[in-house]
Length: 46
Image 1 (cartoon, helix red, strand yellow):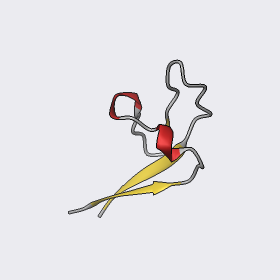
Image 2 (cartoon, rainbow, N blue to C red):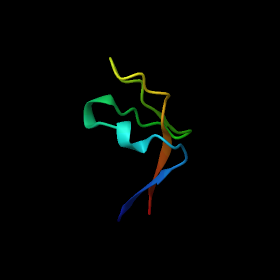
Image 3 (spheres, rainbow, N blue to C red):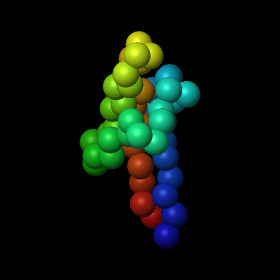
C-alpha cells in the first residue's frame, strides 16, 4: 500500500505537519501568522 499526495493548489510550500487536515474531499491548511491562502491537495491510498 502506498500513499500518494496530489497537490491541486499552488501554495504547497506552506503545508506543515501540524497544520494539515486530511479529508476525502481535500485538505485545507490555514496556517497562523503566514498569510496562507489555503493550499489544496488530496491523498490517495492505493
